[in-house]
Length: 515
View 1 (tube, rainbow, N blue to C red):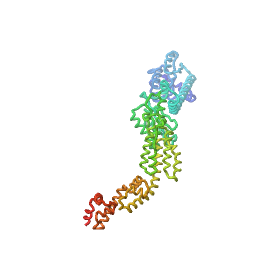
View 2 (view 1 turned 30 degrees about the horizontal axis):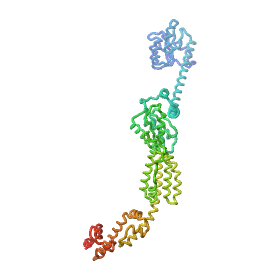
View 3 (view 1 turned 120 degrees about the vertical axis):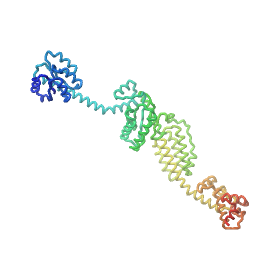
View 4 (view 1 turned 45 degrees about the vertical axis):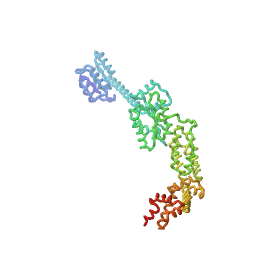
């Protein structure tokens, strides 16, 4: 309390007669006029001022006016003479409700002080209530905004007037007329912590000035943003994926709607859901827009056909590289069909069965059990990886099995060559048809794969090598004898041509070079 009066006897009287402590009040100072009162108020800012109206320098009404401008929360009790009553009423425009006619006793003053104290307590309680409500609303507001976005994209249709009401309620400010919707999905096993973190990372990377609303729906995070330049947006989205992956070692698939007005939020949400379904073709961790989505996925017009004969032959023969390339071609063709998960698997499972049937009988059952794992996969890339891995494993098993068998066949072929090196009719067809009873083409490929040379080249080289050994060991050997001995029959001229081709010299020149 501050007491202001230019009469000392009044100051002393009120100061001593009023029972301040019983009123839960404290008299902290006195002043003789308005100017002294202003100085005291600026330093101490009391809650209540009791002031005479008629004072020299600055009267009570001027004091009220000056204090009201700077400290409107300070309450006044004005003392006035009877003739000043109408003058005192002017103070009511500054919120002054209490005034006392002089002379007044301490009871009247105490009653006025008590009423003002009650009013201040009520205001303080009201202010505390408002502050508490504001704090509670601050806590609830994010949940309310989150729920609003869910309703905006799923349940309700909001017109422009409805949106403007909610925009003001949630203090949403945006400069661009159009907005975008972003749908983010955590891949693999997830917990609520991951969605909470993904939301915070996305809002941090995009920036508070860009994000209008955000929420979670199932395992997905939904964010409504202002429209920005496409390249910058995709840079932000890549940053979100990178940051989340660094912290949680999980990938995020992102679907982005086209820009549209806020009232088209439901349409934008459907767009992002369609884009997210397209992750089956583009794989986990993609950033997908409506431009990436072709014809509606899932329709099968019965036009897809694939002949798996070449693939199964490659798998059975253990030709890993050829099988891998053929599977790449198959899945590229299948991807172009834009079929949904179930329809795609209806084509892949029979192919997988054909591949499995190329495995050994001892392992076939184990591979057949893996079909259950195939059914759990939910992207085309994952299916392709699974089928290719299985096919390559079967290729490796078959190659290992064939290799031991093939090595025996090749050893037998080499033995036949050694034994018949002087036979003019020695050829691949003769060995295949007359000795081993096998397909010449298959035998030729097998021979080259094992030895690195064609059958005919191997035979010709072996004949010349043996002829060289004879020349080195027998000084007077003749060319026609060498030709007859190593399968050239009665054609020594041809033998000389072949010999020179392999050694760089004719037989005669080679013999002379040794002396």
